[in-house]
Image (cartoon, rainbow, N blue to C red; front, side, top):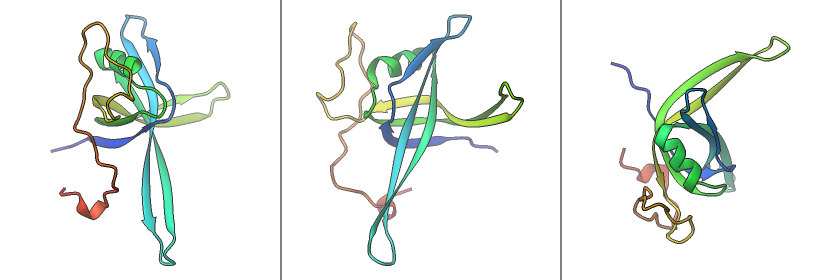
Amino acid sequence: MNLNKAMIIGNVTRDPETRTTPDGTPVTSFSVATNMRWTNKAGQKQDRAEYHNIVAWRKLADICSQYLKKGSKVYIEGRLQTRSWDDQQGQKHWRTEIIAENMIMLDKAGSAPAPSNNEIAPTAPQPSEEEISVEEIPF
């Protein structure tokens, strides 16, 4: 049995960019930063950010493009995929992306754009402001 699943909660680092494939399929890409905070042995708080490349296809691409913006708090669920390409100088490049299968906006009510055209935007229970440590997560 195999499993390829990624779940992250973080902030959108740039406005989503939408393109259309030659056959008309919309694809939206953006990045999300996740932060880790800990206290080192000297008692000083340390921070580290990880940046994740996100790609959404079809209807989810349209929703991400319409409702997400730089700074939005978001939950992304999907699968990891690595692609490679050769640049003009013949050098190989690799990029690992999360192919989004689900997105939930986590901004407080009123801070995200309102849905239009009678669409309902994905929502989730509002997170509390206090920090949760990794040890408190039940899974």
